[in-house]
Length: 341
Image 1 (cartoon, rainbow, N blue to C red):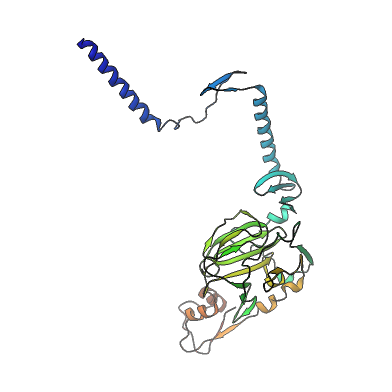
Image 2: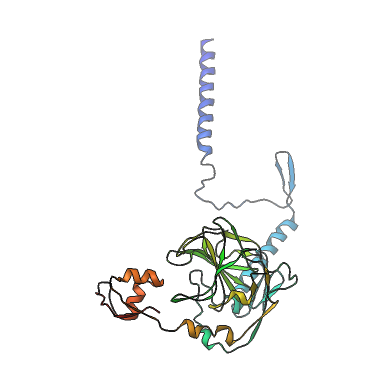
């Protein structure tokens, strides 16, 4: 009798120890040293899992082999940069040839992606003053009522495109309140989304399918990242006053090949409409650059410092020093002329 009790106690203890050991090891169940597991299953094998029956047939393995072959061929085709293009149905890529189709818009891949920077607003190095072509850029496609959207509907322009005090203003400032939704103007892909402490603050730049780009500055919050595919009217961020800003507003720019275009050539902010369905870009579009690039000077007055001059004109101290061949430690003379642009 005593022997039987001892045997039972030992059995219970062994069972408890095994249970504790299995629970302890359960956490590491998927931490294999060799993570490549190759099941060996004979043809027509029946696998019974939780009373559900799965039959593995030859057709299943054939379909897997076909998918692998198609995937490999697709990757090889995508590497042929001279002819390869992709078609995007929103964010799903499918191999085609010669052109890029995003929704219903066809774009030549080489032209669209040949210059693509996620850090620079203007990576193109194309001088608008030397622009000599005449281009027709379609602003709407199948449905003119849905292919565009004002960044801030029913608002006013508080500071327009053009010369503002001593420097050129390359966009329109639109009135808003901090936290207001800012919307995408046209369908496209986000190229830049970052923070510029001394300028745009939090900003997003979007590349559109016709080659135009739009920039949205001084946001309080960014909701998109580079590579995101967007539709006109999508909320890209929230309005604010980050960066070099005197109060809540949206700094809105439109650009072509890096050169700014007056947004009012595209939008009628008073009527909340676009001015035309097709924009014509000519050398006159960039004629303002001659005025914008004029050299301007500041005459030093008593009490002026480089810091004060930098803040007044919105030009960095480093740039003032570079333009005038001086250092930060240089003593300024009353009456001295300093180039600021």
